[in-house]
Amino acid sequence: MIRVVLPQHLRTLAGVEGEVSLDAQGRPTQRTVLDALEANYPTLRGTIRDHGTAKRRDFIRFFACGQDITLEPVDDPLPDEVASGAEPFRVVAA
Figure 1 (cartoon, one colour):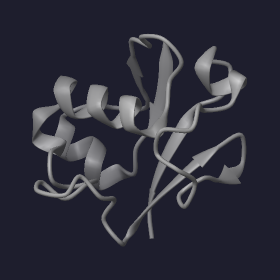
Figure 2 (figure 1 turned 180 degrees about the vertical axis):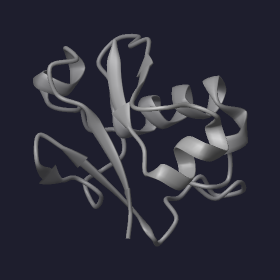
Figure 3 (figure 1 turned 120 degrees about the vertical axis):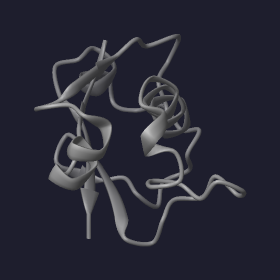
Figure 4 (figure 1 turned 90 degrees about the horizontal axis):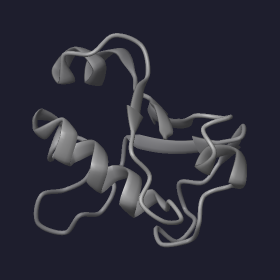
């Protein structure tokens, strides 16, 4: 399970409290986590990534293990700590 921490306004939009858990299929990447997040919470489509291009919105940042991974390739594997659920994948609104 991947743990995802969302900013308050996205939690409200998704109708969740606290962090969310997503099933991890294979080695998780930014793309697979965001795909799963949007599949489980369709109201988030278009808020984190653009509908047409699937590119990250300018005001959104991603963190894993305390490191800003926003500009890393979206298909790079996430750190083992995030993949195992020990650390969350954080979505932060700038």
